[in-house]
Length: 409
Figure 1 (spheres, rainbow, N blue to C red):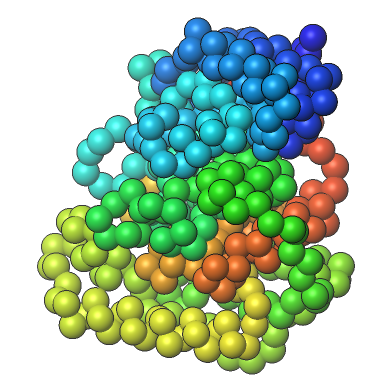
Figure 2 (cartoon, helix red, strand yellow):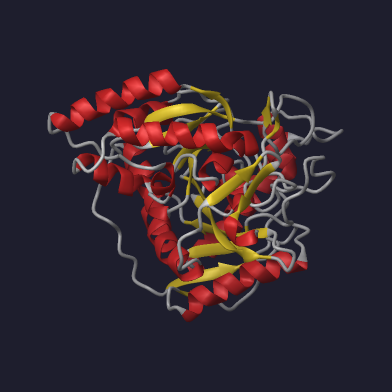
């Protein structure tokens, strides 16, 4: 048997290894996950639905596959499914084929006008497990909260402007978006890529292998890799303290020999807002940009990013320009300012926990790689995560009013 506390300390790969080795069954693991959701989710509100009966039945089928000697990459791993996707989406069916067990639907924002970066449930808004006063980010709000609270080790998301990377940054976990087109897009414009929320970058690599069906030997980059730092990309209104926290994490990676920070002119992109808005057909601007304006933004940024990745292997920024806002919403600030350029360009990107502000607000380090170099990105993330966060996170606890990390109590 496995207790809920033991379960919450395991990564997705830990769980799969134990199930394949017969140390625990998938049914026992899923039972522990359901018990933890039942115990803690009223204090987090990560899930809008819990599929207990279906999950246990599916776990039994995974155990049967393991007993037959089938190699199951993610055997018995409980996962959260972003509610706006559902279990039938491409990435979720691929995860199930790899042995994952969906246990429920994770919260997303209510449909409505304007920017909404917080999840909605019939019990109220999804709460950030780091502090219930903060938004968990969005739109993959429930998926991030579920992973951060130790309810599941892996949850699916989708990222059209930063909707995986932003909640990862604000919940202190890892959020990964592959190269656009690597997986079927979730919008006609091709900007909204499937992605994943995890606690351990190695689980993101396992996810990538599962959804692409292309498990290959691990990439071993030749360290140090060249990296370019930008706090603003030339246009974002980034808080100085947020920039300083992310910059310190970049320096730590340089001191550890993982990267060298390139010297030279700052990367200056054109604000992608009008191009993104036009391509998605969303009416955030009173005057719709012309096709010539969109073409200018896309062409200019493509040229500048091409130059960037000729000079360097990685681009580093803060994930968001400001800390998590409260549940009253973001106001006029654009949490997507540093992420959505790479939904337009298509580059793979992820967010790693970088540290906190003086008030304890989480900051993410945004790492962007060349197109189709996901394995390099994930290998760097694995090493970087161990440099920036050498100890395992303490277990999460929840109260009726919300969830808090034990180290903050």
